[in-house]
Length: 337
Length: 267
Image (cartoon, rainbow over all chains, first blue to last red; front, side, top):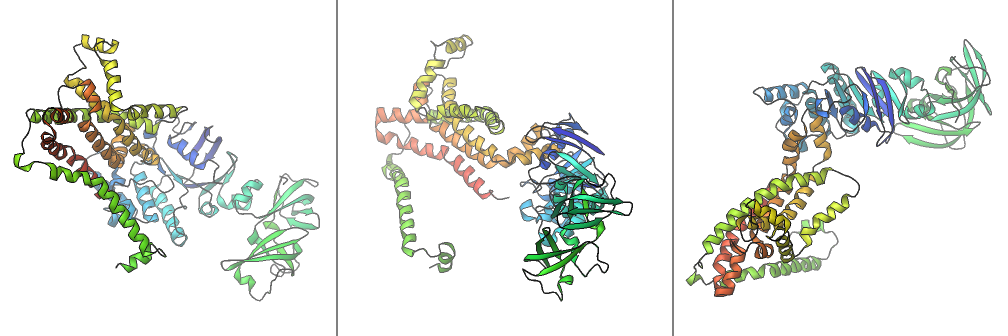
């Protein structure tokens, strides 16, 4: 399904993107992601298709806002039955839907007595009761506990696949985007990139997209050599080999992006060491079981060391460290900082 | 002593502070309620009887207050909903104007009404040509009660509607319900506590309205005007039986609605 929507107020957005199965639109808070969903749902004035020009109640969509907006005065099954026409089978249909999301036992409860994950599933069942052609999810991970989040997300994705309804989820959470079938990146009111998550995460199109996707290291440099086998990018005091990319030629100003978790201590990738850089450790910070190492020298880099690689090393601020990055993990963008 | 509660709630607070707070609350409460003791002591229980016309006044008050209340709810609810839902430049002017009838002293309001709807005004002249006389008639009585009660109802109902999360009304629309269905199935149930308070308040205001009624509709006499007449004609003792009736008919509805909504406050 192709979506094309334009709105001016309260934010300016011009969105054109594909929705396939479970699609995540990734964007910063305040970019207007919620407004896009409301525009598609017909709740704020906008131009676009599909459903453009229809009143909200006539659009075949299911909308799950943040916090799910269950009706507090209705029991779980009554919430699910809300969109169903009055009739004998209303309760049965609602109970069937609740059973499909695994909540038949809690049908008589009011929303206040349900957990975040349970509320989400009731809201999902309620949205699906209308047989929508498109499901809109606003930050589906925001109201979930870290402990149960992945489990609930897996279940949510499995359920929407089961129901066979295309989903557009908006989020600022790259973790959710990784689980998607298709993703798009929203920046300054436009889609700057879309595709399968694997491709987008590996090759962000712009620095803004790279930041959103979790890249932390950006180096300004210049292309030195290009060949079919690879390229060399260099800055003041550093040189890095990268894979070949089309449209690059020697002399071009570029920005290099490297993920913190793609940097490794010098002895890990083996000899002959590609892309070895000698840097000085500036600070160390534990991040759960990993260690974040901030280094300076010819360039400033941020490395996230998994605990397996911390073993047997003594790292301290002031120490000199060789670090490496595999050429295929050095991402070059034609954009200057 | 509820030691645990004292530690849990007011940790570090002196016990004497609690005593002072309790004593102050008790004093103020006594001050507020003390005059009602007079109702029991001052009533002449051995010679408890109604003055002539009291029963008619009760009938007038009950019937026309109910009518006024119905009209207030019918007309006030859409206005309150509109005030709660539409936002535009200069809305504060409308808000301020809405307070005008509330801030006007009842007697002054009565004078304004008689000037506007009275037989010598253009509006009153037109209405009387249509057979509707708005001075000292039943319609005038209801009109006075409406002006006394509607502003209170509209303010309460507006606050009640504003308390309903807009998101829930929007979700209802995305679930295939139009504005009208959304109003009945989402807005009204969720606003019902506040609306109930508004109805209770409007009922008491309508029943007890004296100042406006005195000027615009001295006849037909309702309970408040009859108080005044009994007091003037027969003295204080003639007021108490009617006062008892007033409390018995005017207060139970708001009291019942209030208690009911408090109990059902949680879903």
